[in-house]
Length: 359
Image (cartoon, rainbow, N blue to C red; front, top):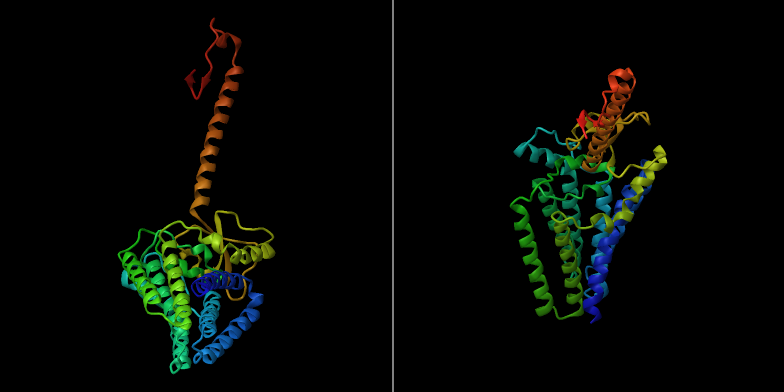
């Protein structure tokens, strides 16, 4: 029984913890760049070594080692990507007037180097495990790569919930390539294919897997695949993605408070973008901050007003208008009180008026 319970629990915990740890690490300020680079390099070397050593180990422990090393390898390249070190030849926001094929080309240019890095990581895993009996590492990486490509395409074509609040400042420009709208025809197709693949994996786990190694390996990979399908549904339903990894994005707020002495309000998202590209971030109202002088690299702090903040501003404006109307009525009434008594006393007490209407 433990052979069917321990692998999914381990896979779910590693998926949750590694995602939050990466977000926490890349959310730190630039003075931690050397430390982040050291962590990424250490994870890369350790994971490749573990994959090479476990490639011939067809045991339950070998399956766990290969699975864990692949997730660590994925985490290493995620640190490099989300920190903004390896993105693409054009790490800039998408111009607001670009549509169609040109928008796809610009989006590809924004992440092209990262795609090459993923291919290189996959090739390294194939090279290290090709002749071995333990292929759990290759299965795990293939699962992560396929589901990640599907998520990128869906975000580009359009989904109702982008969860872009999880994105660190190093890749804020990628938000401009997301389409927050109703789903395209690719979403049901991708989810259907992924679900069908998951059913086949579970069927093989129940009917084909016999050895403890096969059971552990298939359970680990199928659990990760199921979590990837769940991430797809995060893009359609308002599921609590922020609550799952809220502890991982606290570093963004901590660094903001440390640098500027205050935390961003609930309706604002703080992002560091290049000065020429500030006006293009998601067609939002961008206000440059004067709190800190721009660095030699030409970076500036922008406060992007989100929809809740705009709604709050509209409500405040409406309230201000009502107060102005009440003040005007009050002044008019007192002006009437200063008129001569003969003009005010007409034998009958005048009715009270509000906004020139008789009550």
